[in-house]
Amino acid sequence: MENIIINGGRPLYGNVTINGMKNAALPVICACILNEEPCIIDNIPPVSDIEILLDILVSMGASVQRLSKTSVEINCKHIIPCSSTNEMAVKLRGSSYLLGAEFGRFGKASVFSPGGCSIGARPLDLHMKGFEALGATCGFKGGRIEVESERGPIGSSIYFDKVSVGATANMILASVLADGVTVIENAAREPHIVDLAVFLNACGANITGAGTSVIKVKGVEKLHGCRYAIIPDMIEAGTFMAAVAATSGKVTVKNVIPKHLEAVSAKLEEAGATVIVGDDYITVESNGKLKGVSIVTQPYPGFATDMQPQFSAMLCFAEGTSDVVENIFNSRFLFTDELNKMGANIKVDGNHAVIRGGAALSGAPLFCHDLRAGAAMVIAALASEGESTISGIDKIERGYYDIVGKFEKLGANIQKKEVKTDEQSYTSLSV
Ligand code: UD1
Image 1 (cartoon, rainbow, N blue to C red):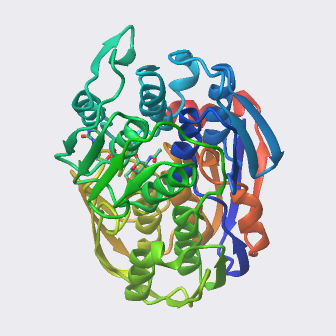
Image 2 (image 1 turned 30 degrees about the vertical axis):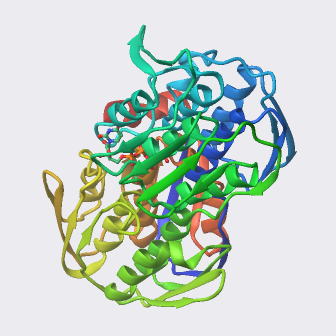
């Protein structure tokens, strides 16, 4: 077990290079299942969610060869459908993409109910509705979701009542090799949906409209191998941008696509930080004097729910009142109890938080419930006076590569420390 120890109050200065996007890499890795030829994927983030997914593919019979820390060759020629184990699939939400990919290639799929962060209800009804539209029968058996059609996927029209990243990606995966044309309406427009489509098209798929709310997939006979680099992680970049604004200093986030960060940049400027946008970098400068702003989470291109906790932490240091409305997940304010222990003043009522900012916060022992909540605690601790100890950091490491090393290089007093299990009692009490 390790904790992150932060002695806060230091400004951040320098450059930080952003890794590839976890949430784009997960569906792209699963998309390799559709391909009988090997693919090389570059700019893979070396985070635990990705390691688990690669292990799942290996356990199913794929060959996975590490070419470097961020490049991997995946060959799914001999993969066996429906063979992922319960123990592995439950560890991450991204395992739900096995359903679309297995069904797309083999006409049958079976995966144990996917896990992921505890941020509220995460049903799969839209995914199942989509598979059924493609001709499958779906059901639960022994905790596993089973999808099957004797004829394999047949192209069809699917309208989603709600915008869902996961369901949109799963429909693309399921329909790439389908017989006929599939039209996905009210599709998610997130950059990782576009990344999946661009990767699959580079392998010979015929997908148009990704990045708009109507995606058309013309089924093709088969795919061929390719080499592809995952897009940069806009959430990792946004996390560093919010951290600089909260702590003060001047930091350039490098290897980003600034367009993906427009909502984040706009809100930082509104809060009083200076944002300079380059071709593939963004510089944020802050004197730490911020003012409260309102945030409403929405599907892309709106303000991402995955940035809400980090911005909520930052707004604790902003003068005045900030309103934060969380529209995507219904339990995404759990972390506010931890920030209140540091002296923050956040009142939550359902999906609405009111943050009265500006008071000095002091370091405290903190427990991390989920990935982005953990990032919020890191930001709060960096901008507070005194020492904070963050436990439960395995959640942070699901999606951030070397967050400690990266903040340390920017001048933060931050380190990881091994703790014995009996010293971890705070963690178990807090779950
Ligand atoms: C993905 C991301 C997650 C991000 C989220 C929203 C991954 C691995 N995870 O999660 O980090 O926070 O997008 O940007 O990429 N819903 C249903 N029925 C369904 C599916 C979803 O009601 O079948 C609801 C969800 O409860 C939620 C909303 O739709 O309220 C959006 O969820 P969705 O976009 O599907 O999130 P994920 O793909 O799970």
